[in-house]
Length: 187
Image (cartoon, rainbow, N blue to C red; front, top):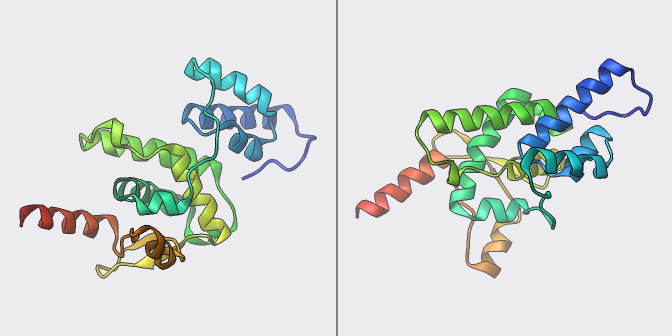
């Protein structure tokens, strides 16, 4: 969902501002929120400061490759990304980023982690979840099938990345990845 017209009625404007504030509360960076809502970055930065009592982070966001090559980030972000795909549906996720679904994804993901007693310090950054949604829509990442039948995001260039970094993105879903890690720890 993206606002395309500069001429919107007041009720729609309020809805868009609520979406922007919710995205900012979830730590989504102001330039991303601007792209979603057409609200100026200056105004969004001001709102961000009011919400978080600090300036928004600067600099580039992580790449899909960086997210998916780091085991902890792969596991956490993939879990959240699956929630996003469930909420949007595969076809819609390939067409556009649904920012309402992104907010719901972050909320559901955090709630589920809290219910399971997982520490908040390890949760996937909201912007990483956005990066996977954006890159899935643009075709920079794809879904691969695990031997257990589950699908997980992967970068097509992972073999090339492995040649240069020595790191290979996991060839399995987060659940199988965790199980493999646990079994190597037991041995």
